[in-house]
Structure formats: structure tokens, C-alpha cells
Amino acid sequence: MGLPLPRAGGLCYARRSMKSPRPILIDTDPGLDDAIALLLTFASPELDLRGILTVAGNVPVNLTTRNALQICELAGKTEIPVYAGCPRPLLRHLETAESVHGDNGLADVPLPAPTIQAQKQHAVDFLIDTVMATPGITLCLLGPMTNLAVALIKEPRIAANIGSVVAMAGSFFAGGNSAPALEFNMQVDPHAAHVVMTAGLDVTLAPLDLTHSVLTTDEQLARVAKLPGRIGKAATAWLSFYGAHDRKKYGTPGGPLHDPCVIAYVLWPELFTGKRVAVDIDLKSDLVPGMTVMDWWGTTGKAPNALVLHQADVRGFYDRLFERIGALAAAVQ
Image (cartoon, rainbow, N blue to C red; front, side):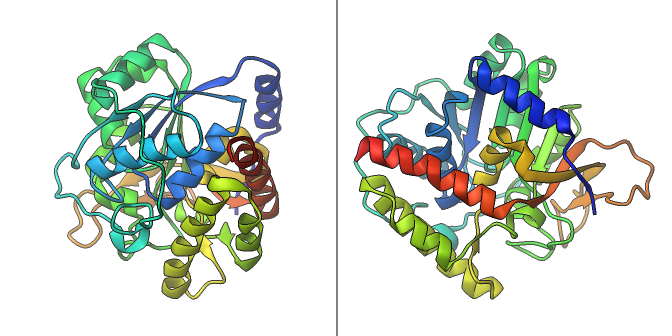
């Protein structure tokens, strides 16, 4: 159940497309689906990517940072600055996902050695500086929320300047992907998620309930394989590796494509259906610390604090995704 996003969302998108690009920051832990999300961003002139922040998650932060640099190199986007962020969650030991993303986080696919280096400034400090200088900026969170949580603790004034936060995080009906009832990003750093979700921000969540409907089936893999050049080759290898693990795990005809849903929503909100609900992060349970408790039916009487996306126009999503990445691939081959 849920209502389509208000028509005003589509109108806002239309106005943005005629004005200057929308300023965004991407906070990420590449990661195979993160890599596809970055390529979509690079290929979208509506977005003004001010920087890439890395965080520990799918693999340790030294690898997520190198991976971000290599993805920039692959796409010919070496002008985009990359900032290394937090190497561990706020309170927990780091849990990683090499079994899903490969030992280096990018399925060990050969990529160009980066000719650029990460910036010397810490990602948290860059986030604070950029948000304070750019009122209304959109933050796209593709990994654990550690960097943003630390920034909110260090400089609470940024909350008033953040236009919106769009995050791949959580689950309700869909259960979990890393543990029962736990989505991976929430499991890695539930305390950071609690800080973000209680900061009074305009938050949109792309949970497993949404992303598990956006499957990279054989049909979609065949479309990826037709993309030209080095980007086409890398994307095909990434999605083939990623999909094989999830097909086996879930028994589905394809693997869920999680993180690109965040960028797609920022670009094309009309493709998605969502509902505003109250979302709490369970920090007390021994079984599921980090579970997103979503008051879908309004039973608690709590005020909604997030727009939770739960349906997508899957055909429209993949058509636009491959159109954009295909154009980028053709430009840099």
C-alpha cells in the first residue's frame, strides 16, 4: 500500500532540469552496486557532484577509497574529488561483505590504476564545509551513515543547511539481506543511522522492499553486455558477479540493484512510489540491532520522519539507467 509521490515531485524535477544542476554529495562504500550508481551520476548533467565521500562498509575504507578513485578513472571523471572517511562504525566492530562484492569490493575486475589521489581533508570535514557553503544540498548515502552522523555530532548546524538526504537503507516487509530483519547498511552502523534519523532532516529511504523489486535479470544483463568500451566491459563483469551471488541466495531471476535506486530517485522521482512513515532504529535488541522499525500503518501515532520508497517502474528505471550509462560508455571508450 502507499500513494504515488505527489505530482509536485515531478514538477520540481522539471524545474531543476531547466535550471542549474542540482548540487549533491555522494557518501559511498564501493561496492558493485555503488559503482553502477556512480556511473549513473557521472552520466547525468542534471547533477552537480561536489565530491565523493568514502566510508567503511562493503570493504574497509582503504579499499572503498581506492575503488572510488578507480571508478572515476574508468569513467574519465578524474576532476571529481574523493575524500576518505570513517574507517569503522561509531560503536560496533566493522562487518564487511567481500562474499557479495569480491575481495577488493569490485569483484577483482581489472581497472585502470588511478592517476589521482584522495584529498588530504577528511570526508567528515569536507562534508561539513560543503554543506555550510551550499544550503539545500542533497546528500546521497549509499553505504553506512557513519560520516554524516559524525558530521552532525561535530557540527550540528549543518542540519539546517541540508536540503535532503536520500539513503539506501532499511527494510520492512522484505526482511533482511545480511541477517534476519537487517539490511546491511543499517547492520554495519545502527548508531549512526539513529543519529541521522533523529536529526530532523528531510530523509528518503530506498529500503530492500524497493530494491528487491529492481532485479538485474538475464534480459538486463544482455542489455549491459551491449554497452561499449571499457565501461561496458566493467559493468557487465560487475553485475554478472553481483547477480550470481544474489540469485543463489534468494532464488530470484536476478540480483537486486540497490544503490542506483538512490540516484534514480533524485533524477526521476516520478518512477517511484512511497509513503511517509515514522522510522525508528532498534538499538536495544540482541538479535537485530539496527532493524528499521517502520510504522507503516500509523499504529504508534508518531509523526513521520521519512519518505519510504517501496515500488518502482522497473522497466523505466532500467531503460533510463542503460541509456545514461551507455552514453557515458560511448564517450570514453
